[in-house]
Image (cartoon, rainbow, N blue to C red; front, side, top):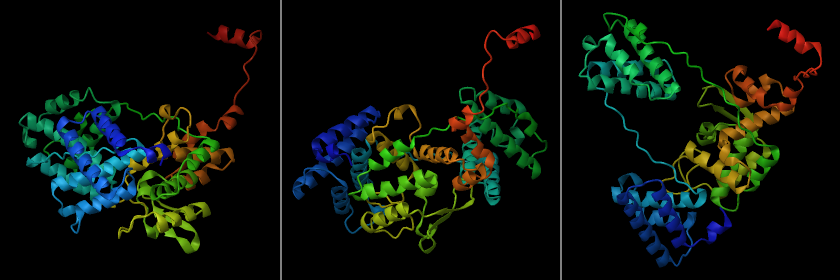
Length: 419
């Protein structure tokens, strides 16, 4: 934690926090709820003779709210008190708070809704990823909502024109969203045709777009910047010990945020100095060396920083309830230390854990590491994904550059003649 924030009075901290909530356009009612919770924390701190807020005080306060009960059994009001305390600590340590949205799930009713649910269950049985299933559900739910708004509840009422009307209504979405929506509906209708749920195959009605995902140039940081990033971590407290270990996993091994946050104790084979896990994105098994500095950082966190918990996850939140860390929080952590390290132009570049992964790929390319080896280290399904990193190896690219002929040569005259 920044020394200035450690010395910040609770009044200054809470004032900045409320100002931040106003900036996020929180409602007056919700801000009043946060202010009430802050007043209770202040009262608790005065009673305990404390002037400065930190993770230890947060834990003591939360424990006083929960008492002998479980978090799940708390009233809505007392759960709010716990959330306010942890959000205040998160704001103090990162300057932001994670959004806590509850995903609104549209109820898939009627004949069409039943078939959508059946389709999703079928895809789940075929081991499609959770991300793919969530995407299918989202886009098919929008289609279902549109049909309901037109009074269509059965496939017998569905006309081709209504499908086209829905597609036309997608105009304000991005090209990527339109592409994913069309793909989800097309594969849904193909499924209905396979199980003979429709009298006619109408999947051909769904137009094929020419969308192609453009691969962006990966964001990378230099070795010196990565060194400054790691040096910016204060490892004298539980948060710093946890953060340092996670940053090393991203910077030294190139692990994705999902795999770092999802890492459990059985993934570390201590006697063999190995990290072995099934990647959440690719479902591919990956085996990486447990480097000495990473192993020591994890041990330091487990012995002196990790809260007592029965969860198998290694990295946990700082305050009760001690749930596993989420990917957005890890993104905020990386961003926080990049800023603390004083690295230039962070705001104009990618500044999450994936940027550290890209940087590792760049370092390996500099050492002339073969693409298949880099692909194996990063856990790519094939080397095609790894090829995108070739564009960041400027030294190698410069060797491919051709000299530009001088203006007074026959080269340009020949080109003009051809035109």
